[in-house]
Image (tube, rainbow, N blue to C red; front, top):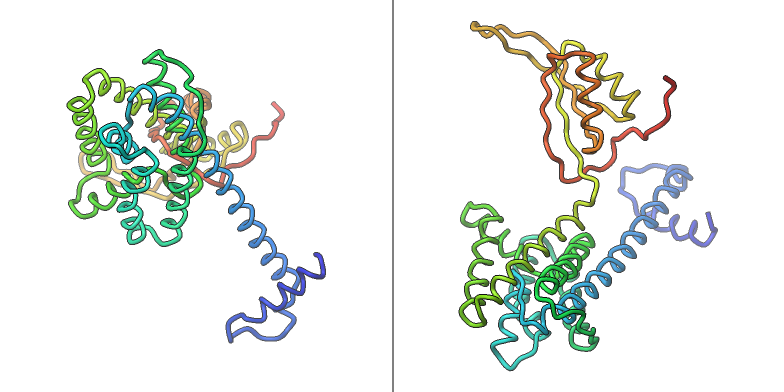
Length: 325
């Protein structure tokens, strides 16, 4: 390690808890390497978040300026409210992007934390500045293309912002607050809010604009899910079988996946007799489901298999490697 950084870490590590003993532990290579690694990961995450936020801002601004604004289409959420108000009042869209989201930012400070609120404030302010100063050309006059691709670019921007740890549309913060207060789901609240927005669009603008705006919202929401969750969807597989050891080896050796083994009890018969049994759990991609089912059928046709969709997974997977047949 560079002597300059070594000195910095050495000074920082001297401030450890009082229970630590001796300079050897403090200045150990392991401790200093760990501190350097943590600093490096923090810096990389900060850089990644900044890049994703900037890309999200420009993607959303492009969708607004090149597609939605020229055709008077709106979206759901806080962005939709801002678009609708900008059409009905003399004030411009950037002003409403800040004003409409401001209460949600304050709400997010209490619900999620000050760091989230600061990042969200900067992202929304950045979006307002880009919309006000950078003018993208209108791409097409076809209303269906405007609705679809306007929603796509706006949704991509929202999704990229979420991946960076902030939002440029504060509706989900409101939904989170109301779901906790009234014990309902966030999905129900978001649906109700958007229903009110599109009803207002139909009344103040036109029914056609409201219908096309619903297409915009659907395109945006699907794009947000795609950007956040990624293209590779995972499936959690739970397997109960008397041949659990053979199935475990097959998954590790043929699929190259990790396995978690639980110990459970199997209930059967009218009298409810129980028997100890191993329960296997693994996570695979949807492209591997067919192969897994085929291999399980070869080992135990009577195996009990349950599949659940997973939003995202981190770590724990064995890297795929070639196996001799």
